Every structure is written in structure tokens, then in C-alpha cells.
Amino acid sequence: MFPFAGSDIALVALVVLAIIIIFSGVKTVPQGYQWTVERFGRYVRTLRPGLSLIVPFIDRIGHKVNVMEQVLDVPSQEVITKDNAKVTVDGIAFFQSLDPAKTSYEITNLNLALLNLAMTNIRTVMGSMDLDALLSHRDEINERLLRVVDQAASPWGVKVNRIEIKDIVPPADLVAAMGRQMKAEREKRAVILEAEGQRQSEILRAEGQKQSQILEAEGRREAAFRDAEARERQAQAEAKATEVLSVAIAGGNSLSVNYFIAEKYLKALEAMAQSPNQKVLIMPVETTQILGSLAGIGEIAKAAFGTDAPALARLAPRGSVPPAGG
Image (cartoon, rainbow, N blue to C red; front, side):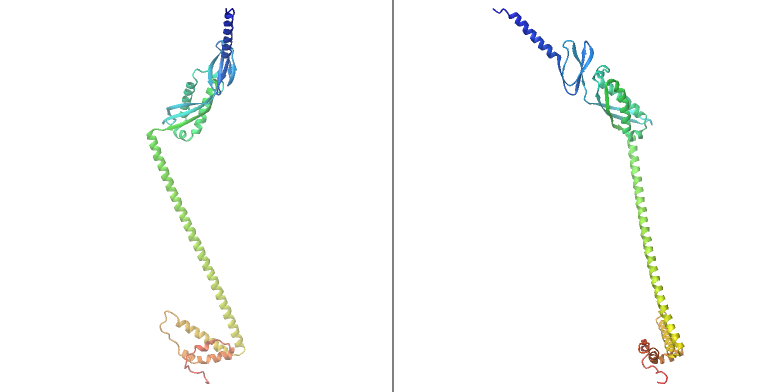
């Protein structure tokens, strides 16, 4: 009734087998990974992200390697520095597989190998430095560690991108000593700043006094200059008066001479009377005679200098003895 049933079943079986074979040879590699292909147990090639074909039943996937950058946490460990200080250090490393074949077949446990490599070189590098350099040159430590570890991991097809020291913890007693030292340094800087401020204040005060003294000296110089000018003008006026008097004497005008002498005499008496220590003024007998003749000085001045003569005659007291011939 079904003459071709057996052959149909065989055909269907062959089709199914072909489909299975085809699908077993098709591989889809996700992004960020690369797969190694082994043929009879030997590495032949690497599959990159995307759709790839392998020979069914002959080829197989050996290792699925992560080629993205990975993070390796380096646990804390104790390190003895060059000056015998014991510190606790931990870090972190960033690495990436560049050659999946070497990563798969040159090293058994990559993460463990990198971890031991990083910890060993941390002890080596930091043990060759003293504590002060350890605390102040962290960038230099990172660079040295990166150079050494990257060179050591290169045969494994791995690129170490960064190694960072996270924490450097000195012993508690050393931390306390460093705190006291920092406090002393801050107090020292505060004292220095205060002294510097006082010094600047003294300098500014001295500059102010200097400027004040300069201005005072300038004022005294200006006053002396003006006094000299006044004395010069007075001397010129007296020289002019002396010249006029000399001309009058040469012309035989005795009235001008009498006026000049009387004026000088009265100025001398005025200066004596205005002295603060002078309580009693003793005048010679001739003074009364001169005072008696003061009423005639105005007439002398008018006769000698005309109507514009000085008002010296007004200084004569009332009821004085009139001049001779009056």
C-alpha cells in the first residue's frame, strides 16, 4: 500500500541530517568575543564577531575568549619599604586580550597569573623606595608597575593598559607621628606668616613716617624760602629808603634826616614796650624831649616828603610840647 515508505523515510532522514550538519557548522560569535577553532585537537584559526562556518565533526570551538578590557582587583598586602616601614597596599589592574590564541594556549589561568604577577611586582617596586617617596610619587610607582607587568604579560597575548595603586596605609603609630609633624608644620607656617605680616606692617609704618618727614622738610624748606624772600624784599626796601635818605642828605635836606631818625627811634621804643618780660620801661631824659617834639614830626614829614608822608605824626600824644618857634 505504501511502496515508497522506506525510501521516503530515508530521504527525510538524510535531509534532517544535512540540516543538522549545516547548522552544526554555522557559528555566530558575539561582539566582544573571539573563538578559537581546533581541528583534531590542534588550533587552526580564530573566529571573529559575526557569522562563521566550520567543518562539522572535524572542527570544534576550543576557547571563547573575552577581548574586552577587563578589571582585575589586586587585594591588599603588606609591603616593607626601603627604610623598613611596613605599609598595607592594594591596587587595581586593567588588561585586554589582543591575541586569543596565545591567551588560550600559552597560559592556563590568565587572571591568576596576572594577579600574582601584579602583587609580586608591587612588592618589588615599592620595596625599593622609602616611605616618603612612596607617599609622594604614586604616579611614578604606577608607571613602573605598568611597564614591568605589561612586558611580562606580553607572551600571553595580553595588553596591560593600566595599573593603579588604590591605597597606601602606613602603621597607626606612623600615621599619628605624621599627623603631629603636619600640625607642627602648619603652626610653623602660621608663625612665619604672622612675622611676615608684622614685618610688612613695620615697613609700611616706616614708609609713612619717611613720607611725613619728607613732607615736613619740604614745608620747612618752603617756609624758609618765603622768609628769605620776605627778608630780601625788606632789605631792598631799606636799601631804597637809605638811597632816598642819602640823596636827601646830599641835597642838604635836614628835615628828612630828622624824620628818619625819629621813625627808627619810635620803632625801637615800640619793640621794647611789646617785650613779654618787660614790666618797667626806663627811658633816658632825652626821650621826653623827643616825645615833646613829636607834634612837630608831622610838619617835618610834610615839609620833607609832601602831603603823602607817613602818618607818624598821629602817634604823638595829645598836649605835647609844641616844637620850637611854635
